[in-house]
Length: 295
Length: 128
Image 1 (cartoon, rainbow over the protein chains, first blue to last red):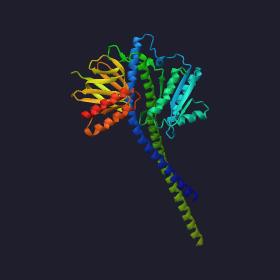
Image 2: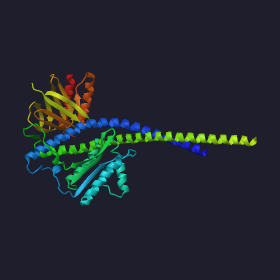
Image 3: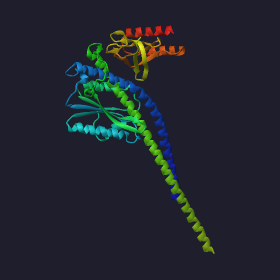
Image 4: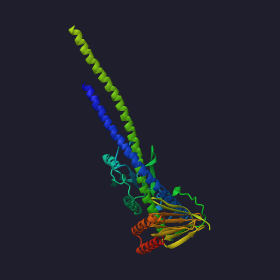
């Protein structure tokens, strides 16, 4: 009998878990829809901004034989100091979402360390911070709350600081890692070189042949403003992208958990019924044998 | 009159994407107008009002805070931080004008630029 009671208790507990995971799945899917909409709207802006920056940079490169003479574009062939920014979620229960980003960050760190490059880490999101703290790896920046609720102002404040340290020469390269949203069921870790602006990928595909006029006409004012905006917006967009991916990952994980719980309830119910049948049979045998002995 | 493509894009979405006859932009070095076949140009945009004339001769104004514009022969692309379109039905227009004024005043550019932009917005409001 004790066994019966225990199974019943187990069924109840699994059912409770199922309810929780199902609710989390619903919440995530609702949040995902909102974030996806946000990402869709800002994607156009991000794409156009990048396009504009590329075009200007490409034209400048064309007219200037020895590359672009601007701090944001100076490529350091052998970087001595690299800043790595990585975005993880503040919360867990989203499958491999956080660990994928952390893994990628770790690989990159080890690679740079093997080359003798000094690496500074800047972590956004509690999960990443916890991981590196637990492993005793020093973090230069710890930001909590930004990845759960991307805010343009906060994001640009953070990244401006990082960009400033690049301009000051405290770092030679800034790399941004985040887990991005592909579709409802796929996420993809994305690694981006934020600064210096990667001129190797530039291509001139503009149809226009006339010379580019820039206003205000000293090159740096516009280019500086544009690069700043580009960096700020890339950071913000990465946060949104990461959030969308987080929700989709959580939705998937919770969906799997709900299915598993359902399966478990089914199995436990079969077990419960068997145990019940067994106890009834035992009782019957006892009664019958008791009667037999009284004859 | 020849038409050209105009795009106005903000972080919150596309405000306008279509063919226009001409567009007037608040550049950082002064206001300038663009017609089709304009030479390639990139400029910073200041707080102000973008006015464009659509193919059906209607003029539409969009208040912006700051941004960039890229002009070439075929297409004008405005990438702005914040924008409010001053068009729509009578009931919406007063709301739009209020929103535009708040947007203009929230920027950090020079007060004269803001003042002239606000005045322009009010002017447009009266014409409805």
